[in-house]
View 1 (spheres, rainbow, N blue to C red):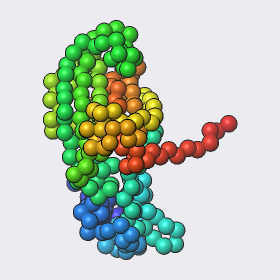
View 2 (cartoon, rainbow, N blue to C red):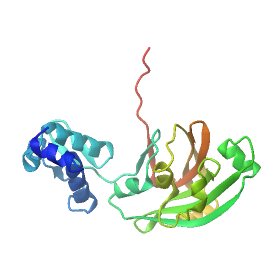
View 3 (tube, rainbow, N blue to C red):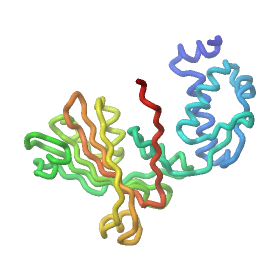
View 4 (tube, rainbow, N blue to C red):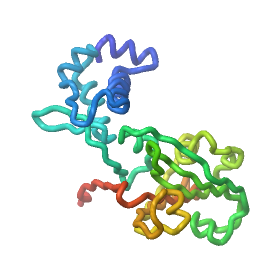
Length: 246
């Protein structure tokens, strides 16, 4: 680590984060359009007076986030906009939308605190009745609806959620910031939009949609069940696997 990197780390920041932030800002602001070549590693090393390892770490993280594409012998380039979500990760929809170069907006449509119904208990895999919070939300990409969210939160596991209005922050990032999850389950299916979903996503009734349902647990306690619905033509799910050892 160089002296500058050491000083940055001691001051609470890092050159890695600065490089990451600077390049992300140029991409998301549109200053660097899709196809724009990112400066070569040796150029960034000179510009930030840091090690090549620090630059490589930042570029690798940008590539993993889908903001840039790294081409062997050619360098790194701003990636063409596409909506993808990693199937095996719990991601923030805001990051997904901003990776498309679009303005993100969130809207809470409904909030209801109630005693769990039989359907609620089945969705959350609860063994006994208890308080839950039901939320309906809409996520926008630019001016268009991007994803419809229906969520149940187990208030026995996350009591403070019962006091949160979720007007300014979406429930997903709020929960990730407060409850360490230990296990998650994804289910993916296709549906035809009913009238309610069609109105929410501004699509025709019967239009194909992709539904991603997720349950999470914390230390074996059910935390939340969420159902995200996307217009099929606007969303892709991606998973990368490695062969099991042995």
